[in-house]
Image (cartoon, rainbow, N blue to C red; front, top):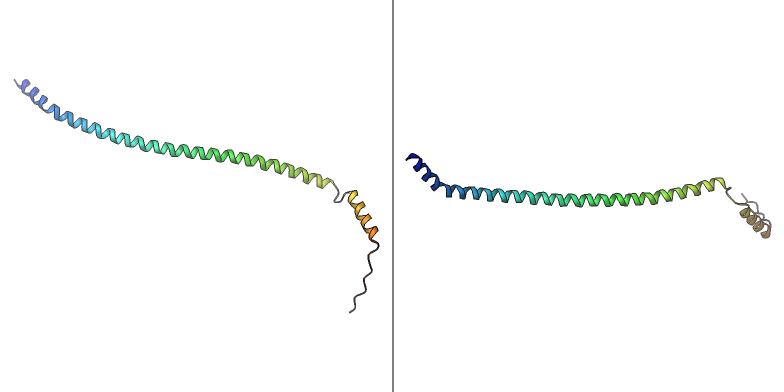
Length: 113
């Protein structure tokens, strides 16, 4: 007989206990979904940051390559100018021709004191 009473009491309490469990599971599910939504938001933000920094790296590599090429050309030109005389023989000939056709420079009058 005591076994029968315990079974009836357990059966009577079971639906209420099931409702509590279902409510608890629903609350845990909502909490879990909110946590997953927060993680998804963080993941999206981090992906955009990674994309931004990759683009910045690519731009930097491109600009660095251009700068290096420009500096190489500049260094080559500087080296050529260091080897060449300041004025070429053609320049000297033109300057000499221009001064000879203009005649001698006029003499200046002495400055009076």
